[in-house]
Image (cartoon, rainbow over all chains, first blue to last red; front, side, top):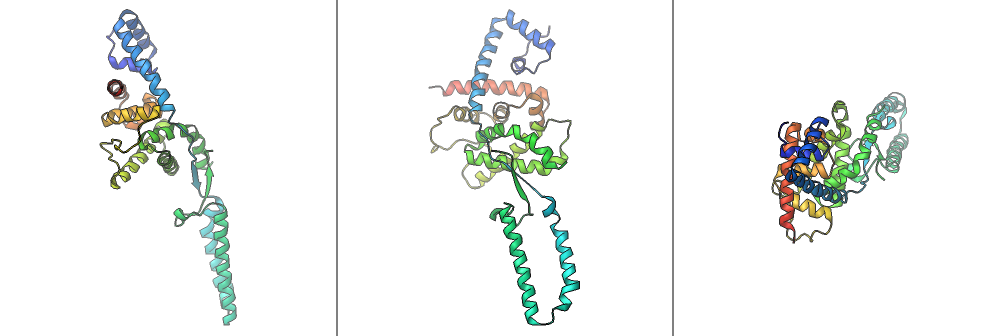
Length: 140
Length: 161
């Protein structure tokens, strides 16, 4: 049997040795009290450290942003509406009043879009220049 | 199936350990939560490049580790912490919880040793996952982890009152 290397004690403790080698480690520990004592000390420390590390855990609130089909298609929809406006509506705007109504309509539409985005949580101050999206929480 | 739909169920079971791991590096709950959030989004952006023959946990914790390093770099830039020689400042309140004592002892070790110990204990990575996260062979994981444990044992003994 190949002599047991110190690192193999750690691997045995972690259940990372193959079954044949694990049995050899067990046999060696039975025959060598010093090796058994070292393993026991490792096990004791390992148990305490695991418990300590677990006490640092908490459930973070994580959100995954993603583009939904509606918002992903927004650029194409905007281009379509702009084309329609250019071809069908702009030639008919012959006086100042009509232009005024038209510009007010555009402004209102932009406001409605942003109100909807805010309501969906897709627009926050920090991300106001990023692509539109929604938030899905995967934490609590 | 959308990337998010595939990604979220894989990520969800890792969040508690991810928070603990980040907290062991960044100390505050708030900074740890920010790092996990950042890693979650970065992982989602890169999920298409994930090789399914590898461990998802190892892959994602490598991203989280980088996010924590980025945050520490920001701290360093703000002259509050040092990445290479991270020592808790003297003005910090005394360690009160078990994880803080453990983390403080790990901070006194070499960078290689504290990295592998944090990933083993706070993130609970297997040897295969450690090898993938740290980009080292599994044999190196075994020997490095053992040496790191011995170093931590010695450090804990030194810090005992």
